[in-house]
Every structure is written in structure tokens, then in C-alpha cells.
Length: 347
Image 1 (cartoon, rainbow, N blue to C red):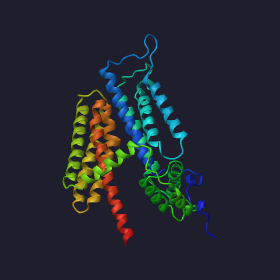
Image 2: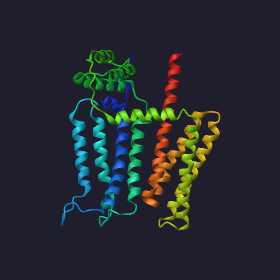
Image 3: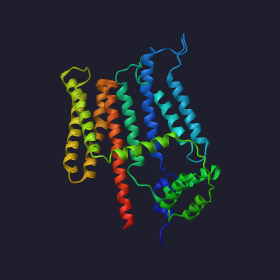
Image 4: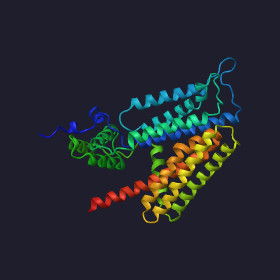
């Protein structure tokens, strides 16, 4: 006798914890808004002369507003059925967490020093840790068919109340199809078809921006010069990091020498990966892109972290370039995977 379908699933699925196929988009939104909030807060406080909100002996620190925004995000995410307001929850949570983590210097120093020098590196480390957590949760295992079916049911739950646009119905159909063969798949597919049509959808500017940006990246990456531009950008960032590392090693920047040594090692590894990517990419474009992506990940997870310790907020420029390149390579590799899957299914 064969095992029951539930017995063949992982522990989390057996507990009913199915991963949302849109989770990465929401989590990236949360992290991007977090970083943008930190940078905007630092800029606005600097140009306004770091005002004291409250007056006298009172000072309403922005960590309190951050807590309020995170509480609102939790209320939004717990109040509605379906995915309609998850993007809003991600944005509110990002604003709140950004306001919270911006004051990390006060939390780790005895004198509540907002201007504690390693603050930029600490914030960067927190964001990197969260990125690694996202990768661990969503980047290492393909979605189980039962997860696709669960997400299709989630979409249908929202549709039952408000109806489906044509795009929403097509998305739910695709999800239900990927969950075919699972218990309840036929019923979910029937529910998707039974949901009434409706042209009015909840506005989701985040999703629209992500789709528009993905299409733009995909179009740009079809150009011949795109690979050259990506390579130059990564090498230029690595060159800037090498310069920072050398300044630290020779004593021009007042941070421990090991920070400079780590920057030099990380930048050198990135350059090595890019060179390897250029060599391999001559015969296999995908393999070349994978090697360049590895170099960017080394830069993000090591080099820029240490650079933010050495030159603090100046390292943001390298961070932005690395993130843009990482997104571009992710879109390129994702498009390649889709083409491969389509060719295999057509055989």
C-alpha cells in the first residue's frame, strides 16, 4: 500500500505551512523599503540639523514611529483574507523596521550614541542576515505542488469576495495547474473557474512596478552591450572597494587593518569570479552569468559589509550597483530557465 500523500510531504507542509509563491517579492519589497527608509531618515535628519521632537526633557525618537508602522503592518496582514493587501503590509513593515534599525547605535552603546561609527556596518549586517534568511526559506527548495495549490486557493479566496480580473484568473489557473495531482486539485480548479469576473482590482503599485522593472531588465538584457555594461559595473565597484581596502591597510582610514584586508580579499575574489565568467561565457553565456553572479554575492555579503565599516555611508554606492546587477542577472537567469522549461515541455 502506498503512503498517504501527506506522509510524502515535508514537516512544514504537514503542519499546514505552505510558502507563498509571491513571498520573495513581498520580502524584497520589505528589505528595499527598509534600506530606503534608513537612507531617507539619515538624509532628512542631516539637512534639518537633527531636531529634537518633543522639547524640554522629552524626545520622541523615530524608533517609536517605527514601532507604530510595524504594528500597522501586522494589523493589515492579519485583517484581510487573500493577498490583496500584502504589498501594503510589506511597505509599512519596511518603513517601520527602517525607522527602528536606524537607531541601532543607541541600542548597542552605553551612552545611547546615535552617531556610533559602526552603525552603517551593523545595519548592513542586519539586512544581509535577513537576505540570507530569505534565501534559506525560498531559494533552496522548489515549491511543492501542494504549495502551488494552496496559493491558488488563497487567490480564489480573494476572488470569491471581489471577483477575478482576467489576469488574476489566469494566474490562479496556472497555480492550480501546477498543483494538479494533489488532493483537492480538481475542486480548486473548479473554484477558480466559478469565481465571478470583475474588472476592478485592488491597486497594487508595488506589483506593477516589479512587473514593469522585470520587463525593462529583460528587454535591456537582450541587447549585445548589456553583458559588457554588467561586467564593467561589477569591476568598477570591485575597483572602488580595492581602493578603500588599500586606504585602510596603509592607515588612511581609522579602522582595524583586518577590515582592509577583508575588503581586499573580497574584491579580489569578485574580480576572479568575473574574469572566470568572461572566459566561460565565451562558450556558455549562462555559465558566465552564474560566475559573475557569484562575484556579486561575494561583494554583497563580504566586501560591501566591511566597506561600510570603513567608509560608513559612502559604501552605499557600491551596494546599489551590486543590487542592481544582482537583480539583472536574476531576471536573465530566470528568463533562461523559463525558455528551457518551455522547450522541454514542447518535446
